[in-house]
Image (cartoon, rainbow, N blue to C red):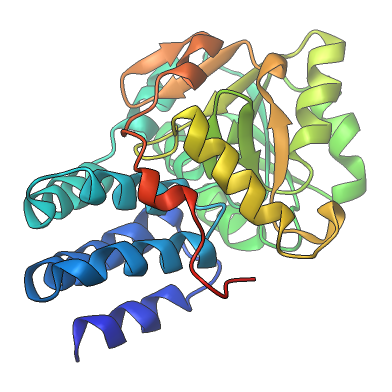
Length: 270
């Protein structure tokens, strides 16, 4: 299959692990860079237009467009995403016997909780996405309590730690599954610890964070109809990154440069 055709196929995938989706895109982008260097910019623009809330796709695109050797940059990025240590950092940082609340089906958080297997998990159904994670956590030995979406405030107020996984983050906060803002806000008000979880490729520089929000605003949907919502940075007391546990200043430490080519949308996108 031609790399452009494969890229179009992958770009149409919805609901996949953000990092896995970016890894699948990296090979095609590397081939495009080798065969048609001029085609790399429009290809990357189309990807971020199609997946505006996927931090690793923005991160991958920015790294390739800013590199003198996009093929090498694609290989390095795919390796970093595949071997993301964030789940292990989170698993090690969570206190023993903690009651943890999470929303939806967060991939990095889910892997960390499976590794621990000894925690009580309040799993809030974020749009019907939690069933698979619930079963995998139970298989790992965790005590899991499924919580309907209308119980998100109650779950957050009684948890020991609320974990909010970023699909994309920046200086203003992060994008996460619907219900995450309510969970973080209630927990912060109740004095419960609120941790952001930002794996490889999730934290972007301010200009790309703003560009991602602008693309979300331009999609014509009301905020409550989207599959992500903005959670402000000030609600978090800790941020778990590939390097470990940090304060909220981690939102100001992007993992990629600003690629000016990504600040402009593809002609006709909307």
